[in-house]
Image 1 (cartoon, helix red, strand yellow):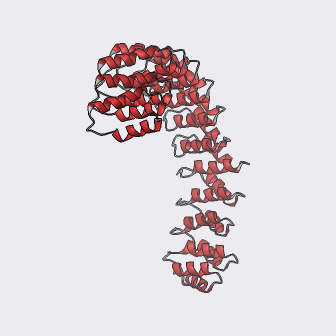
Image 2 (cartoon, one colour):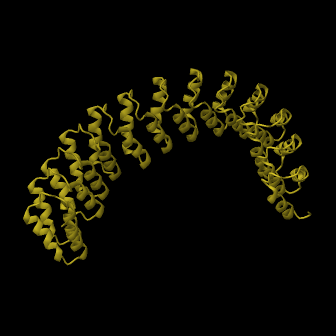
Image 3 (tube, rainbow, N blue to C red):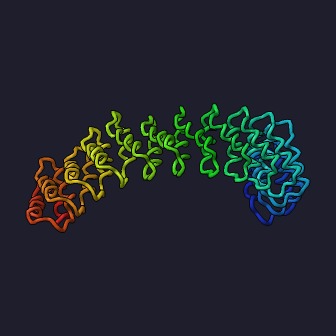
Length: 443
């Protein structure tokens, strides 16, 4: 038909039909050379995945790797990728395009051959030759295509490793990704990856850290290189450096101090990563714990918060540090008061004064803090009578939220004296319906 929409629409219903006569298949294949790109693309999609395609039609699809339109080239790549029935002649035609004068065609040829387990050595070498292509996008595609192949000879690995010093950052990053996780890397290649820790581009530095992370065979010099990135100008890199060092049992004190210094980082993602890296480490020196505790009084509320979270859950905290956390129950920032309650919650060794400090938060102006105090006190079997009486006294507080919080905190206790039960029951006639409701639920 003279109208491209009609030609395209005529192809669509034929796609995926198992009963197409050869003549119709040839009719679709003729549209591979249609003047309109949408029709060419639709013709490829209609032929894609058919098991009965003759060699001539497969060659027609392969010819579209040279199409001037990238969407059509991509459709041809996807149609050819992974087909087990490609005749050798078609494969050779695809491989010949690795040296095409047009960079888009070279790239398309690489992507069409990518992932094939049956590639002859000659084709692998042709692909590897593109590692030195004049166009960065082709070099990158060549690395991606060779990446993860278990059968790569050392010469080809060296070709990928040479791209660690490529002039284009995307190619350097791709080279790191290709070498990452390979257990058989020679020391020289590891050193090449480690050199990228000081790359001018932050994305490459981050990828280098992630590639070296978790390798058990890292020499101390490379660990020091990762630790140096704790002070990187880019927050993504600092975060990656902490994550890479996290959980390593062999970290020297200096590196642990470097992680602890990130508790004061200006970026919240980095601070959070530092908390997770330090939390629960049994090997933290006392000096470092003291340094973390000193941050409980930092002028920045975010630093005070992360200091509490980093110390939270440690069974070996000296009384002085526990008192430092308890002092934050009266912090001017609600989020700090909240995390202080959560850090003290569930600890069996809390003195009466600290329990009273938590109970005082039932009067907090912030509902999140009051809720945290309720959860911290409710069900504790070790609450002294004085603390219980202080909580019960709040049944008559002028603020309805405090009255409600006091009821919630004492709810479910089997050991409540009759006087406290009567105080709770008196709230059945409270002027606020929400207090009357929680009193009913508690009783």
